[in-house]
Image (cartoon, protein in one colour):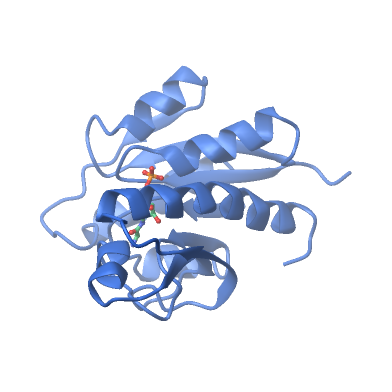
Length: 195
Ligand code: GAR
C-alpha cells in the first residue's frame, strides 16, 4: 500500500466535509492523514473539530481583504502547509479565492468542493441560485483549483434532485450529504495514484 496522503484542509465554516474526510480515514476507507486544519475564521467549528480529533489546527487572520488573503498571509499559509508536509490541499468550505503563492506551491494539488453542478452556479449560495432558477437538478462538484472562481478542471460530480417542496436549507442539506461521499472518494483516487 502507498504511504498515506498528507492532507491540509482549509475551511471557513462548520466543517462537515472535514468531518466526512476524518471519518473516512478513521473508518479505514481512505488511506490519508490530516496533517493540518487551517481556518481564516476565528472560532470556526472546523477548528474545534480538528482539536477534538487531535489534529493540529490554527486560525490564520486573513487581513484586510474580503475575498482573498493578504499576500503576506497567503505566504504564511503556504509555509504552514509545507511545514506539515502536505501533499494535497483540500478546500472544504473555504470562502476566499486562492492566489499565486498557493497555486505555485501546489500545482494541481489543490481541490475544492462546490455545491453545484459546475460550470453552473459558481460563487456563493449556489444551491439557492439553482432553486430560484427553477432547476430540477442540483448537485456538487469536486474540482482542481485555479486562479478563477470555481473554474478549475472538474474531477467528479454528483447529481442531486430538486424536490417540489425544497427550501434552500433542505436542498443544501441533501447536497451536503452528496459532498460527504464525493470528496473522500476523490481524495482516495489521489491516494491510489489514479489522479
Ligand atoms: C459546502 O457545502 C461547500 O460545498 C461550500 O460550503 C459548504 C461548507 O460546508 N463551499 C462553497 O460554497 C465554496 N464556494 P462545511 O463547512 O460543512 O464543509
